[in-house]
Image (tube, rainbow, N blue to C red):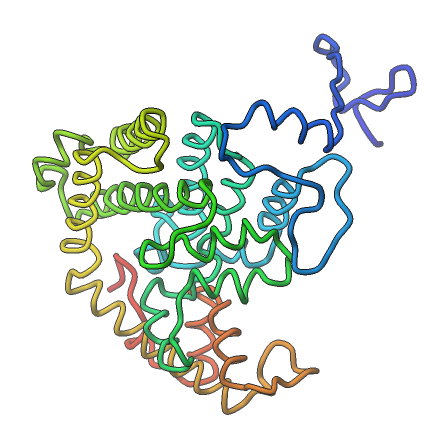
Amino acid sequence: MYGGAVRDGVVLAHAGALPPPIEPRCLTRQERETSALKALAIGATQATGAGRRLRPEEPDPWRTCFERDRDRILHSNAFRRLSGKTQVFVFPDDHQRTRLTHALEVAQVACAVARAVGANVALTEAIALGHDCGHGPGGHASEDAFDLFLPGGYNHAVWGADVVLAPLNLCAETLDGIRHHSWSLPTPTTPEGVIVSWSDRAAYSAHDLEDAVSAGIVHPDELPALVKETLGVTRSSQLRALINALIGCIGDTGVIGMDERHAAALAELRSFNYRYIYTRPDAVAQSDAVIKVISALVEHFAEHPEGLAERENLPENPLRAAVTYVAGMTDRFAFDTATRLLNWPASELPRGIDSP
């Protein structure tokens, strides 16, 4: 009833022959922290005890503070909702990216770099997994909608760290990396945060192109010569080149960056995407539709705070509470809510790539 077999008082998952036994090395958190002092590069972020948290906690007996952060993000509602939020295309097909798959790909790139250069992999992964939890439904266009309702505007990086993930009581270093992962914001205070910043740009530049090629929006032959010659035309070759460039630069100089040729190729790839993918007429129409429906939802819930999810504690600032609620919605939930509550015409909702 509870396993495949019982041998010597131990319940097994399978009834067949066992693999060779292991010689366990059950290192406590403290022992692993001590070991990391030798394994990590000088300047890498060290995990210590329960970590620097806003609300003090007891340390975990086995996991480091940054491993706990990674686990908390991974199991959070905010992270799971990323599966229903737009990366580039609303209502994506089965193989196009969502915010969730984007976060996972950023984590792969960032951890590959961090592992190679001796940075703290757990901290890097925690920042990468959580970096886009502040995004609203409908992609970056929702930020333009939320801007209108908040003093100082809305930035998904800051919102993700200070609002969405605040209940998780994450370490200061994790929140700092999430808060500052966008290049337009101040530099993260840890090398791991900077690695994620580069990895984010590398990952979305490569995989957004791949999605657009698959959708027939662009063709690899249209890429600038510098991109084709330096990075190649596939996501695989581009990420390999960019990861190697990051590792090579860090190894040669100790500075988290890229040589000028690879950095220029990445910049040209990103500019190509902006011109032919993000700002093409259909994408602009999609953004306009997102802004209209998101703005209408915020206005509705600000005027009717009793309709918010947590009705038992009506907020002191209904407008901010409305932004918080709408920003947490997935695409489909937001658009279905607009249709149900606001009688929003289906013809004015954002359209998927293959919508009629």
